[in-house]
Length: 293
Image (tube, rainbow, N blue to C red; front, side, top):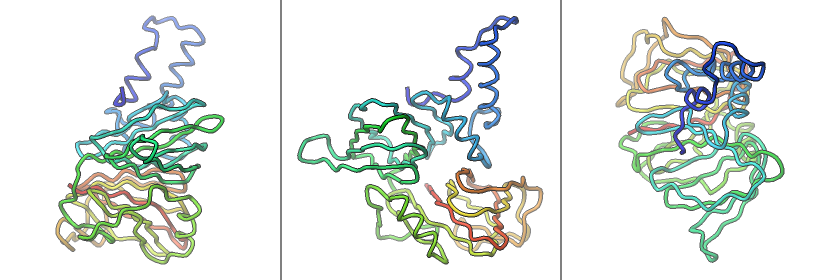
């Protein structure tokens, strides 16, 4: 099944007896390493460091759901040296953030006259609308990708820089080289995708902190690509005022959790969560996935 939570997958095969074999102790150790990345509920939260993401993939099997919300989900998927069957997810639009390895991907209906073929690699982003079927043929070794699944079909509010009434969907594949070039040259946000219920931006902070803010109707995911920053999450906005409908900005954040973030990390910012990013003198770049419903 697609939606198997991390803690259930890891604990279902652990021995129940109190005297464990060496192999049993090792399974417990591996389970604890993965569960350390997750809160008690089994859902990703705050900042997941790149090394922790890699550990989770090692034990993910073929599919591991690590975040489940009414409007979106995050699933770690792995294909290993075998041709995948044609699949389709009619309940969700999907955006794949390729983490490791490479593959040949075919998108379309599955019929011979409607197939688009791509070679993808780590760092690429793949757009798979709910109307699109796909097939994955991995290269040698493991092909790992993070699937962001978006369930609403339409965006109810035009919140976020780059959100507009005119859909601007991304191509089937955004190559790593294109994304890297955009971050290298951009001095402000650049939209990658704005269609349906999803906005994806290249977010750039050039040696200056971001706003202290809360999104009341949107959930944000950050896929860090360039630079480092000090991040504050949760807590309370100081002198918060509505900047635009559903968007609250303030002069500071108190009582927050603090993190150092960098390339490969994932940041989860649920709606109604205060947040703030300070890259210092660095140029910071990340792909923001914003889902408003």
